Length: 444
Image (cartoon, rainbow, N blue to C red):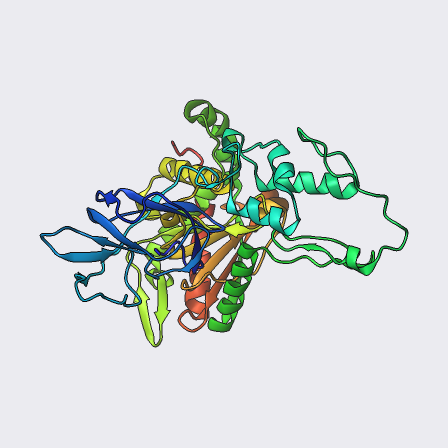
């Protein structure tokens, strides 16, 4: 089972595309897998014959576990696991020796299309939809009746939640067959009827009208564990700088319409922030490091992660690789592409891996500043706040004046094990300098 992200430790086998005895070519997909972040296909790294499948569809498998073996041919007389071997398999007397070959990823076209659960009418359901149906005791007939709004008419989590909400409130669900009638609830409901919780989706039901229990979904549990681990691992320090980004705002206002007309997409502040961070990392390379015991690992590539909020309320961090090698146009297109596919659940596993520094935009929620938690194994993260018009002192050759300026706070959290205040503070100040010195006549 291949690695699918820094915080993902397991995946569900959705569908075997091959069976024991089937021949496979190198790079041919062998199975489909799913996590709460992305769905992917696992290809074979060699050509040969599948001799053993060790897990069945629906099994949850830890990353690194052997899931299948492939015999590469009579000439080599070697049977190769499809994924890196972490547990020796029992060998028969006549069986050839085993050798391990890691297999890379090829991502699926989208998270729903790789579902493999079907009903009698050959309609497909994702593992998440099927789990919700099981938890909420939705019959197959009811499930078949739900109108799907996903790709190719597939039923999504949102469709199921709408169905459940209508059923819970007594409103006739939108379906091709009648939904079960919901009786009028008494003024004081029995305890058994008031303690149900949708553990698969995080939708809670009130216990007594005063409290509500909401079970974390799987992705939220992973995020929670990672955040607690980060706080335990890294002594966090946060430095703040207020930057005058008036030139930057005026430049964007001047070119945004022509840019959208020319490129058919919007330009936001995010790629400009990323450009300034990448330039500052070049100036202060010890920000771009990780810690391994008492060793400091300096990263040569500058890979900037950008935190993106998902429709579910959870968070994912796609990564722009080698951000320092891109111009502003390239950064803009990368940011828009990753953000759009993150919201649609279409990111490939490698697109959420390998970050060396992270940017989070708390200003998009109207916040002026924040104290972000470092995503391990990185050692720093920057939050950019809302841009607000404020009276500010303007220094001129003829004296100081007061003017209305566009101001923004930058919050830089860093790991005090390896970054002291001088470095952490100087870095955020350098990012602010690059933003304040933005050329209002710049071409893109």
